[in-house]
Image (cartoon, rainbow, N blue to C red; front, side):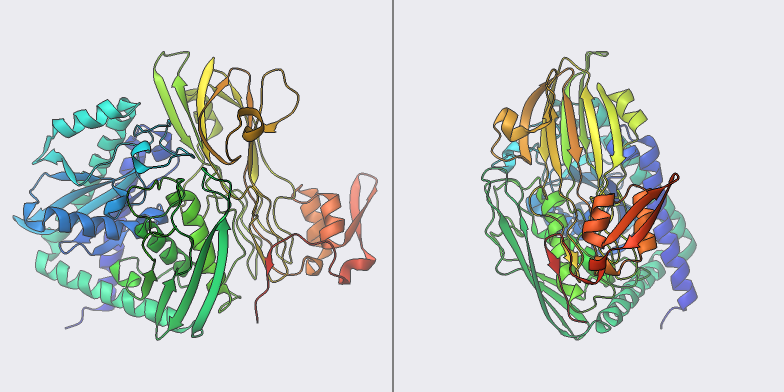
Length: 595
């Protein structure tokens, strides 16, 4: 017998609310800014068969991967081995994970001694050992250089700390106090999830709740299939490139053929380049999460996010390639840089089917900047993982968002005040970067420029960027977005230079363990989003407003939009240039689709 739709909606909302409350608890109690300011975590609930029944809207890159992580843990541990009060921890990318910093904590939930399911959270632990502070070494050549790797092991044993595991963690992490605090924030989150689930089960009963969650999954699957059926059947191909792997300065191709047929999407990555020596390889879970993310961008956001909505989406990722790395290759950048590119190629393919729903490429990089050392004020070791927001691609009916986390996550930048309070760094400036958004009928979102001054006698820095040479593509005649960069001005110098020029790194975008000193300035530029549509079709009044807002320079207004500005008595007005109907000077890499 089917449950009333209203009852199911109430159950779905209550389960989702539990996940959100878990996230709030973690955010308010965690020690690291990447948690309490950056929201680099996720909270979800699973039934006893390991099927996701609810999740909150935190980090999509972890949400898609969580279903594989839990599946692996249950298969390896065995459901019969879970006991009340146990919490298991796991961060192994080769066991269904994303990348090493992301630790899953899994807690069984019992009702009257019968297992109902699990509360789960994944969080980015900011420092886990490895060759570079913060783990994201841009030049790692094997996973053993990327940090401490844990198979599924007990963190809590029937409510007591499994001290052997805690000692291993505290000994191998450079900032053990932060690790201790963040893991306990995650434990508190699981306690909230467990308590709220038990309250729900007391009210509804275990058997009824299990039956209704199965029905929720069935309805989510049916809804997603209807959404996919609205996309024209066909096979759509797209490819893009990672500009290098950090070990060799050569581009690597990601290729996909997306088949839409019978209410299903099959993303086939056959033809993608082999896995690399450097750390840009993605695990299967990362590739799956990115594919789900792209599909969700083009379908109804109201579809319930549980195991059912994932079922109509299939992934073929050949082992040993950039999108399904095999042990022991490094993978730390796969869940930030390559993840972004996989979202982009799937979006680019599906844009050919539904251009009215699609967007041009976003900035598609985390601009991952890691630093650490001995704090001159406290004498203690500090470490920080910093990411920069990027411009999003323009769509068929609106400009791209400015300075937003790349679509793999909804993480936030750490406020400048928090940044400067905790670390020996001064933020000299942080601004939206004029002209970084791709030109178009709808303009790409702007990237940012951040200039940091080193205030410690010595600091170790690492970076893992992309999109420094291959810009985010535009759509339907729109221009490409601006590229990224990271550069340094040594104390006493007058110009910023790339790290390759100063420190002779193999690539300008990926390196580790560079020593910088007090007074050095580091400039981080994030990429802008691609434009959508012919820039000459953008209303001249909008171009004028863009110039007044410093989103677009007068030179770009003339060259790319065909709008000539004239100055008079403290105001600007415009003429439409005679060449406005011509193609004009356009940015590179626009993808034109059939209507």
